Length: 218
Length: 261
Ligand SMILES: Nc1ncnc2c1ncn2[C@@H]1O[C@H](COP(=O)(O)OP(=O)(O)O)[C@@H](O)[C@H]1O
Ligand SMILES: [Mg+2]
Image (cartoon, rainbow over all chains, first blue to last red; front, side):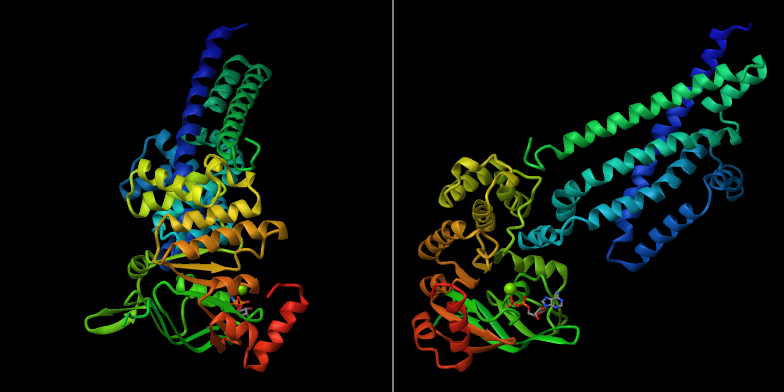
């Protein structure tokens, strides 16, 4: 038997990379989702087209290909990213494209009545969005955002392709060195599940906070 | 002689092929209380929505407080109003909707203070003091901290009235503000509006099917049919001795439907 605590440390290092990718990727996805989601309903047509192209492109091609492009092809255009940054970029933009449709759908589902009240109260366009429309749309987006973040977490495993030492990569290292498949992969199974649970319960707590008072039960 | 506060001049409005307002013209004097009555689909709501800039117009001109509502001057030429001009004009006008349209995520007092704080940069303390006065006036002083979902329909509508008043518009538009309410809640809203009409010099345009209320409230009644004014005059005249056949038929139907005249 080898030195299991050393191998566990290796996997935990990988877990840290996976967590980093998930947090930073989700942050980028959130920004991309709002920019593109608001872009999709912008009054200025070229903005709408741009948002549509982004969304369709990233939803229509695989994360695998996107990662290769970001890491191996962008350098030809003079943009060289570290493996971590490339991973965050690909994951964030990919999941952000799905999130954009969630943002757009949630905003459009706020009743027209609400918009009309903001016009009658002479709010500016920015004030309407910020104080009336978004606060009602956000609670609708949250559950799907939570799912998207978990999807992103699961997708982080692809970064081992660009030699990023994430949790899955480290599990394979341990497997190669020890010959044991079961132990490293049970370990990362538990760790992935734990991380997903943290995301899910975090989002649920946020959701409870945001909808407080909305339904009158407080 | 005072100038009209609203001047509607040969206003046209179509939705696609459907012509809803057809060369409509009328003036409203400052402080005047106007009731707009007529069969469903005659264009009453559309008129109010156009005044609130919730619709666009197809043709004609509207002047509010001495300025064009849907047009502006640019390099000596008349061009369609842009958002900045509409924003500038909207401060004169407030509207109360049939379905209240309160913001469900904000408490009663936040519903009322939101617009004054954002559009007039009123400090929070002053906006809240004023909101409390208005809540007092509509009989809901104890509901400041409640959420809209905890209120009855009549209470919601009274909050909506207070919310519109908080911006101190010179013109208030009321679109069937009691028709979404249970019958027993209608009176409390009408009472607030009667007080408002008696105690302020605001100009008010009211669309209603409550003929008894229109009679009491209005200085002048306009009877609409198919996007045109068929007949207008003081309520005593319109409700007791209407001259037009269509007005008579409409009022008969309304009475038969159980509305008071
Ligand atoms: N957004 C719209 N699109 C198409 N038709 C509309 C729209 N709004 C109103 N209409 C039509 O315009 C006519 C007048 O409507 P409205 O002003 O609501 O009448 P009223 O308030 O007198 O009942 C009706 O025939 C109605 O169906
Ligand atoms: Mg109507």
